[in-house]
Length: 486
Image (cartoon, rainbow, N blue to C red; front, side, top):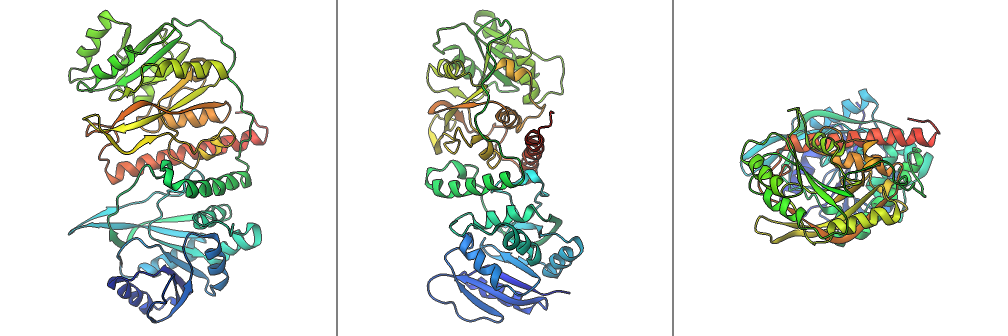
């Protein structure tokens, strides 16, 4: 069996010496490269010390790749105390040798106090290019595949301070597979996931580096799209009103009246309606909608089918005879923050002939208090590169408004997670998308949200679905760039 080099970030805590000793005791470990900054750590068996600021910089990885003299490298990212299962290192190595993969990663146990739970990660696909993809804290790399991807072909971007490892991963994925072992090979302390890192203003430099790397990857695989992007077709067809606010809803008796009143209170200079698609509610929501629909401009639709997700409910509204020329989203537990939100979105759609306009929102709790991160404006979007960077992040923002004629040529997938992201990616492949960066919408986070308190399994399924959406979108863009019609 081949031998491996360990690359690990130094940690001054006592458990780190135990980890080093366990690694040094493995017969397949030839050397341990300990990356540190500041004072040199105390010597340990099989260890060499590399003075570097980060395990994420391009310069660090260029140096490390040159230094390694074994066939494989095992990277251990600093993620708290880690315990290896018996023969886990050997299992990673033999899998890499059998599969010929460029990288091998595995499932893990999460320890929370005295309780441990299995954490299964996702398989890697072309659409898994998001920089937040979870490989876990231990990854085994084939050095020949790494050198083929990096030294022979492209090189790593030395100036990257934060996205060097991301650059390595994407380049490696272009020449070799990234193989997932669905077995828990180690245990780590449970960590909290931050869904909003990529919209945090303090991470602007990090996010720009990630965008640079992702964009270069899309260029290399012929999935990059360049401007100019098409305008929406000139108005065609007859519509009953100029705009519709669409609210898919199921069992939201506590919030639906607020949402409807928020929509009905919009101040506009054109006729509009509110379409509530009531997905067979059983908690009193139906009565609330029906009462308002008797007196106000509310269209109450109860689908004939019982197998619809949020996307399917959107289709019920968009393809109905009641839908206006433009369609704007309002979730059943959210509110418009300003009285001219609908007017501003429609004005943007009209004036620039956008196929879609996305606003900005503020996160609040049940008591209408602002919660972290507050304003979510998705300023990572740019007119020139937004459609490409959209493949790196997990969402494009809210609220969303559409040119109905364009939307009817696409439709929503019949799911209750990621349906908006799928439509936005599809539109961005062909049409220009506009943005409003001021907050015009209040997004309520509470225990009844569809994305509240998700299990690890459901969170992974959601991430896997978006990876699938991105994979299909990359394939479609590659065909488009080859001049093939879909």
